[in-house]
Image (cartoon, rainbow, N blue to C red; front, side, top):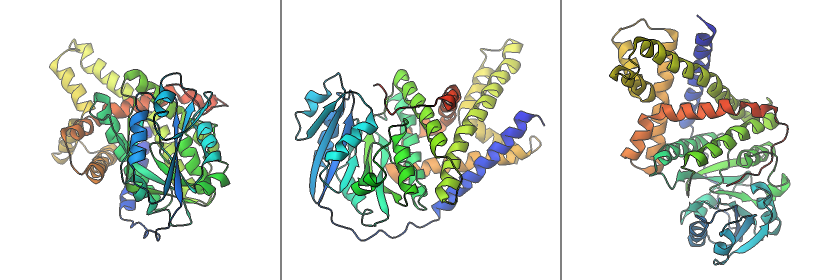
Length: 414
């Protein structure tokens, strides 16, 4: 057995254990909600940089959202050079303008002038549902809860790339819900998260050293002894970048942001977050790099050796080869070969097929849980999940050099 095969088996085995842990968490019952507490009001912060396309819809959704108390909206125009300011000015909101300093600094500016004890952060390209704030309130009565994060859906999911991004967000929301059962959720997503202001102030607000401020703030709140809860009925729909350029820019930022998180926060100690979630995310990154290289090599070499070398590079057989690789059909055929004893069963067959068969039900569970039905716009991306995974792996590989970057500032262009 060569090194690549050994690594593949080890990594796949660890991945299988992680999937088992998800199923184990599914069996956990969420602790009873704390008695609802009355809050005087909520300050909703909308950091915005060049968001003329979406900000009107975002602000309208916030104005229409129910809340049993006072509500103020603070828009921070972070050096926009489009019509963001002129559009926001038409709404009954407070606007803070300044140079382009990044999302974290924008939120901190607003945090200093926020009037109320609750602070919500809503990305300027996202729309919250009418009951989103009320649903989040159900979890904030507990003194240990510092933040409540919403379920995130993709608003522009009917686009080609948007279908895959929507499935990804539903799956991520499911994981946040599972992790929050045992207080190891380390993401407070930008489309909507609600914080207790005093808890943010205790940790010094949002950190600007790194792109992933939504992960960093959750990690630091947990380190400070607080809980981060997922409110599955609190919904925010976000507009994702669905052009190739926008998608590439986003994934580059995500990949580099996670490296910064690992460098600053990955340290094994007695807390469950430090021995489960952060190592899990680090393994996911490492898995993507190693398996991305091995998978890409196997895919290309298989095509070259079995088809191109025989002069059949453009044949139907080659087309079928790629279709099997890129779709769930390859997994189904793999399963049939094993049960029909068409080939000897190896350790990798058992481990690899088990992990593959167990991960797909989680996607369908997320779809049913949050979208309540399954349509062709769900089926297509789930059927062709592998190409999306492979693209993400490639971005992780390309941006691995970020580990040598000593400084990363929470600022980017749109």
